[in-house]
View 1: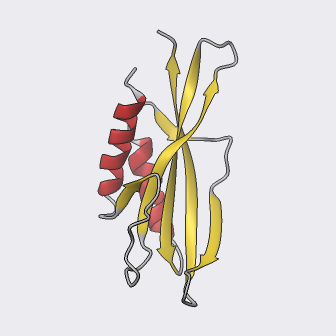
View 2: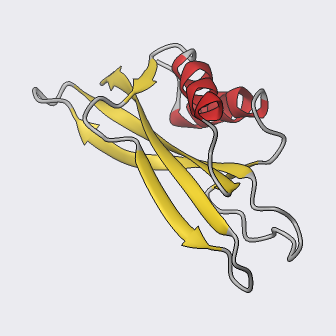
Length: 123
């Protein structure tokens, strides 16, 4: 099974097919006047399997857009990331919608959070 680092690299490459602004962990360097339209991905929780012979590595993908996230963008992220061998949308987690107002403006920002998992067996 491929390493978690390799998985994160694969997720990055898949997300770049959808958006030019893809960042790991956080995006603190966004300019004051730059629209909040980007994708952030990171590690999510790891879960041991029931019989403790392996685990599931989680990857969280957050799509951030001023106003709203188009359904087509959500579907494209699900398709591309799920296309990585062994990766699937986590059926135990909801697709989350989070809202905020961009500081210093009246612009609503929507964030969609998707949880993906990839199982692996102990070596």
